[in-house]
Image 1 (cartoon, one colour):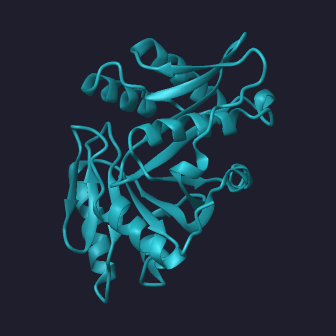
Image 2 (cartoon, rainbow, N blue to C red):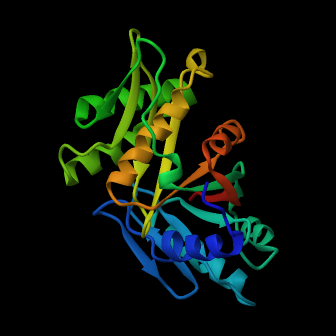
Length: 259
């Protein structure tokens, strides 16, 4: 297992994933204002602040970002990390009208420590999502697991397919009853890739599907030359990731403002 020097990894993570963030589609753009790095993607994409370097004018900068997205008519997310300054940033965001959602743990690992041949339960196969039909099946499964409208995910995956036809935009584990788990890999940083999704039907949990999907995506990342993986982990997945070699780096809390 590659040891984590937390200070060095935080510096690298901030520099590569946050400060040099890549747009998540050709319709999005990343803007560096000096005080913040933000993505602007319009009503069908993710809009928000990825990094901030705030000082005494923090309240003014926060209000300016809120007003910027308000003028565009879109909701925005301020992605707050546990080591971000100033220390009272959560209070300042709340006072500006941003609402916090559940905190997750940022887990990191060297790709080489995680990549392995997926081990699946009997009768289960991995199926790459590479076309519109696969996207629809993945979106329906996501809705079943999380009980939310999958419209945003559907649009995001279809947009990625339109930009790069035939690309594996997600991977599903399929059993005789159909898709039972789905997850995504996104190479959204310089040398880093994010693992997203991890939606598994309740009666299929605890059978190794999450581990298999992590191994598959780590293998894809390794083949693409990506050196590091990260996950915004919920409490349910954090112990599994720790057993696979991921280590806790910091926390992240979405603060969301809606028009």
